[in-house]
Image (cartoon, rainbow, N blue to C red; front, side, top):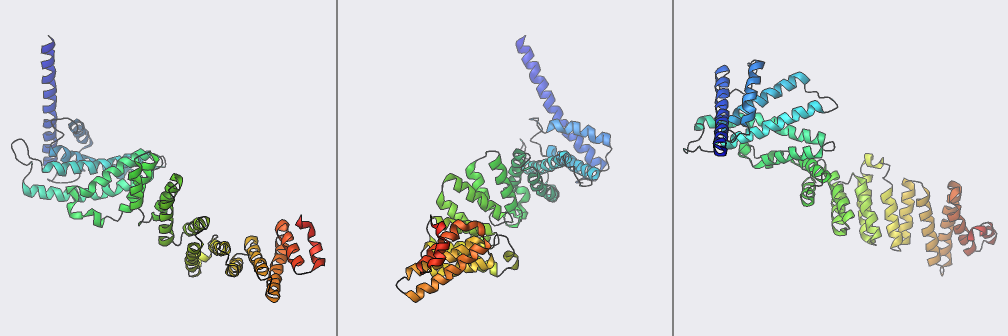
Length: 419
């Protein structure tokens, strides 16, 4: 009895599989009789007929007896293109903020791409008798029709991924995985996508972001960020790489990408400033000064950069690097330049401190020392006037300067700050 049931089950499965292949033929016959052969849309079909053939086709996409037939994907893709036109007519290409309609449309675009890729592949697979499903002339026509039809939906995979990369990063990964498969697929052979696709960098950046967010393969998303550096999202990709290697404690790679960013994105001042700061921390003062000079040159040749609220920092960092390398006179001039650009306490105090240092270094040259003390006193007095809340700094320094120049009355005035 059990054996009989098993045989009956096999017979049922076989009959179902045969039915799926027959359904595909039925769809083919209807479409090619109802509208011109090779047409891409089903706009002439009645809604009830569309629904009938949808019910015939959908199971055929996964059934073992029909999923490897070129015609299955040929007519399934026609149906999805029809659905696309319906969606666009209904929405006018404008999708709601909740993204429900957008997801419906992007799912449709994903299906069109994958179905047409399956169709192209299966057109070249012979049957059990060694024959291809279509004649060469028809295959050539179908190839060009499919290629023309697929390019818009392919581009929309990136649009969809960009819209869902943070809301549903796994979905963005799915879309861009399919997008990446198109580059070496025979459906696109005439397009030479690796040379002509201008959206590769953007797609790589979105893909990398989605992979990182979903906890994907680290080596893969780092490679994708690397491949994004030359595109419009290059600064963001570079920041991702810098942050990654900083968090990993990989100083060499952190500095590698900081240097890259400072060179390639000079208008993004944060990169240059961060690079200079890191070089100062590493006591690489000559390199810090050189990089500060590059950034200053970029700022002084660009009115927009001059107006940037961070534009004063390269001047300050240059002065700090010079001071730390004990080039006090150069540091003095650099602090004054920084103060001219941005008159704050740090720049003015920096210039005053350099002048005081130079006075002490020239103690055996009274005239030189006095000249530097005069400058130091002038700057510290200005600090006193402009920044009264910094008395713990300028008060002590004025006491030292007046004391060292023999102005005892003035020194006494600031003695309380010497405690």
